[in-house]
Length: 436
Image 1 (cartoon, rainbow, N blue to C red):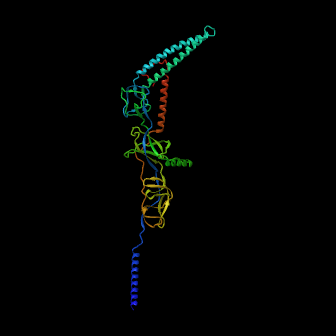
Image 2 (image 1 turned 90 degrees about the vertical axis):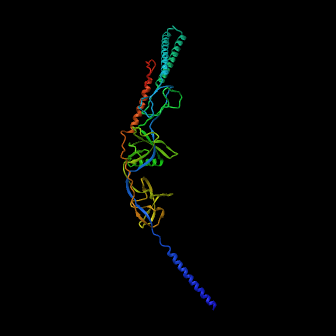
Image 3 (image 1 turned 135 degrees about the vertical axis):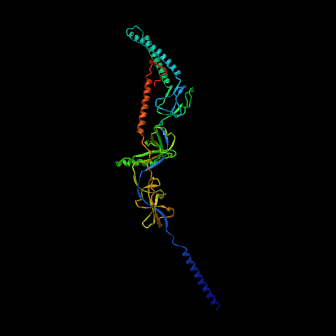
């Protein structure tokens, strides 16, 4: 009987434990409700018209810079140099004391006169000896002596004439002229200083201020893509789109004149992976200073139309750029894309999207492909980026102006050399006549 009672109690305990377990399981399942869909913001991919643009840091560079060195050593008689003073091409900058060189010219002229007289006398003797030689009136030795005397006198005359030409050239170098129009720097010498040769310190520096270059370094990839696009347009018989180039000064002020593309550098900077581009800018008032840092901006004159999405919707991994889209069942899926130009807060898409695709822009970190989400539609923020209203083109072609100025300088050099070559022995010498 005791055993029967014990079995009954054990059965009761088992039933009670089973009830407890069943109640506990029911509570655990009730504490795990179905999570709500994750909330995301979505934009609809659409085509937008815009003017492609770029901006890169740049620096102002002088088209021409000359270190002004005298060619001869002398005392500085006077100088017109002042810091920042503008000189036209051919204006006198500095004059050295010409007295030692005037003396040298006078001495050389007298030597030429003496050598010329001696040459004429020996030439006359040689001509008489040449006429008398066939009749046997003079010996062969006397004939040879007359001939050698004339040749020695001729060599002496040539030496004297060369000395005179050098003396006149040295005299002409006592006046130093501006080789091109520009501004001078601070003078490194004062009136009365004696300039000694050789010397590594110039009298001053002359800088051409109009026009100026703006030097920008463009990535080699962008450079190659640019020329690939140009070649493609040429093959299609389409014109290369014009670009509006301008600069922004430190402080955000836009420089009022548009730039004119001049050239790419002859070599690339391998260490930086860039190619230097030079753009000419009109600088009539000298506002742009060499070595000044500016921002170069470029904008196509014609608008283009592309599929555009916000930049924050684009992610990147080892496969490249990608976005998350919503399918018809509001489930997330991945789409690999190829991006193009940046347009303010947006990005143009070359491949991978079509108009009407719903692209996630917020909540990307909370979702994975296959998730079902609750979406909120938002609009793409368009960038209003008009050209600055104060921009205007230069009054003439800067490239053509530069070509004409360089041609004029070559003519100036040619005329100067011709004037110096006209200073031949026997010319009347006038003090301070430098042959300019």
